[in-house]
Image 1: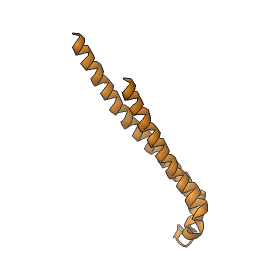
Image 2: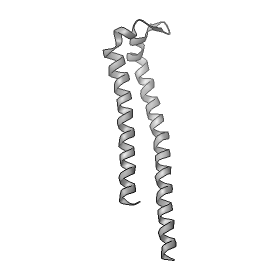
Image 3: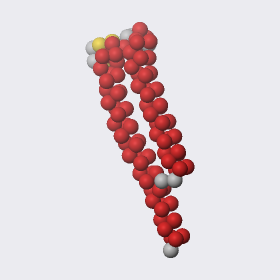
Image 4: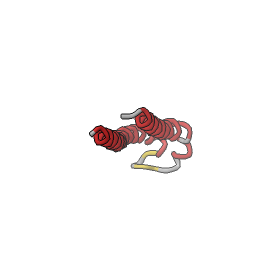
Length: 96
């Protein structure tokens, strides 16, 4: 993998991680602590929504974010593996 390709790969990886961390922070801290009073006006499964997010919902979102990260990184790895194999194919054809 070339230096520019590796830099692009890590830039995309960091952007993905920061995006997912923002979602996790918003759900766990924002919905579970800051906006709990507003969310408590809604009922979910017999419980107030703010309480449910603080106790269960943030855990479900965290697991969903992990699964999303796995799929996104598989796609990112495949994209940059294909690009690096295309570059190596072009380099081997030039040497022939």
